[in-house]
Length: 361
Image 1 (cartoon, helix red, strand yellow):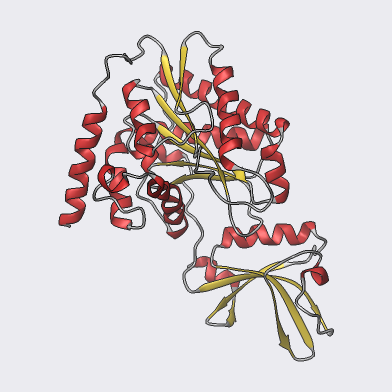
Image 2: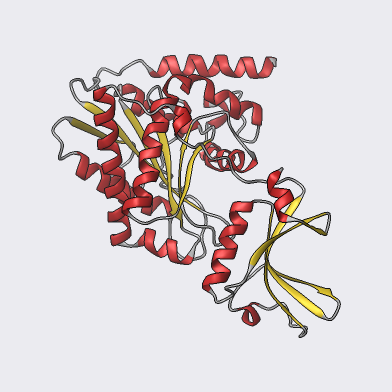
């Protein structure tokens, strides 16, 4: 308890110090100020991918398009955390927003996973972390370790510590409702306008949002590790659609705020990641009397293959995860490959258990 209290004190002092404005950068007044943050940059490329797509480049292209459109509105002032391929420390991104006394902070990223997971998701700061959301928080916060002086500037904060991560949320509580409203608009527009798969609005304790004193969201625009979605994110057409939806959402949010209307938090579904400890989900592809080698070419390119023999039949599976959402993504890929009757199964301690019972818990 002492360590967490000490950490919060450090955070409190740091945020207060962030409020001090330098003489050469006066706060912008009279306009709706938006800080756009392109995730990663410089020697930090972002999430790894074998498909040749780079998160830092895609995020920057989308940010620049969003900013260009927003700047057409004379009542909006856009400030960029970065406009080129440079490394910007997390604390500096927050400081830029605080110095400008911004009305909104929007951080744009791309997602990644070792499976063919797909879809968009938008994060707001919150303590409602499941294991998956906590993992995402750790991954995004670990960029701190790329900073030479991280031990000095983030004293008491450990990206791998749940106590530290939960502590990050306390100073953003005041802005949660507004943040959720914007996040909901973004995910709704992704789904309706771009026909994208939305994984919903989620809460995670991310340093880059916590340390800002205004409504803040972090947008995961899709998975660059997914062959189809990665190509979409890397394309001009895809980036144009994504940026257009973000712009529309921000303008709708601005209009709602100026009218004094805020969507109550309980009217927006805050999705929790579907992690089931002790459970392994697989996707059953087929059952056959043939004993096939577990090679990708025997299963239309699918990976993470396994099989069990029951009587005279061999049952073949793809995937091995404790995240039911990821299992559904694996199933969707299997269906696309032609395994139209594939389905998700659950195992506990190596024994198959009824999926319906697992999901109830």
